[in-house]
Image 1 (cartoon, one colour):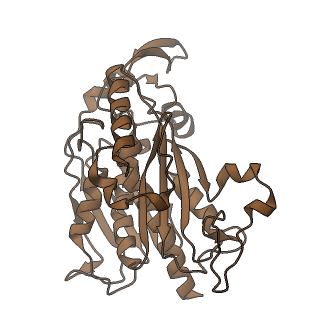
Image 2: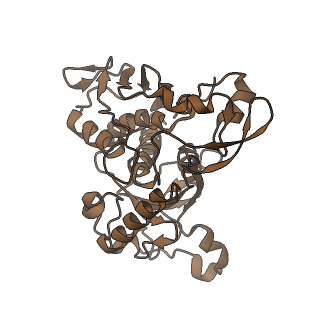
Length: 352
């Protein structure tokens, strides 16, 4: 199975399945001498882990990280950093009913067609449980990027939108509520909507907005490895993501050039930032901001038609522990993937 690694210089390779013994990863390319804040890693893991509130999956996992290599006396050695995260709350029997059934909009059918075999327990390798490994690596990447500030937050759930621009928000309020929306009034509406959807045995999608501040100018490569292209790849690699836009995004397609152009100030900054902090695929020193769209979780607790391994259409009903909305738990994952991209380009600039 290819495609288990991300990055060029700062590189993460992950392994493991949702209901296997453990998941884990190897981080290669981290410079030596970086003092690791293990508490900060625990904090990031707590933000992503299941069972943290009544609007997410109730699977209980401590998500304790065990480091196996690459760290000595609290500092990185420059060697590969290996780590594992045990799966303590496995319930493979919850998935026995789909052993011979392909769930709609899941990876079941495509994995079977590609590999001729699949792990039906929670989706196996296709499960979003794998993203815990990304959060570990992202937490270390954040510590490498000491001056860069990375803030992601829930900006919509269904048709409930946070309409304030990010400049008007207090990022300190992101963690003040279960949905991770920095506006308490909008957050309350989002939470109520998710609870209503959950009671109906259904799911709902939404968006995460991410803001990267104090990013130095000059990160990114100008042709195939543009900074925004790598950020897009990073976000689209996250489970359930259906869209990515940065800067003015799709709204920019409706504008005139005279309105869209970011005019310079004498110090090289721009008076507006519709470019989203990236021009020609390279960071320009302004804030980088982007939005990521997440679909509704495919597993719903309602009866629906599905295809079985014999080629028959059958009725099935979702079971097990699933998020009614992935967006709140996706916030730290978006931050982690952004950190991995920036760390990679930061180190690439040092090499060349």
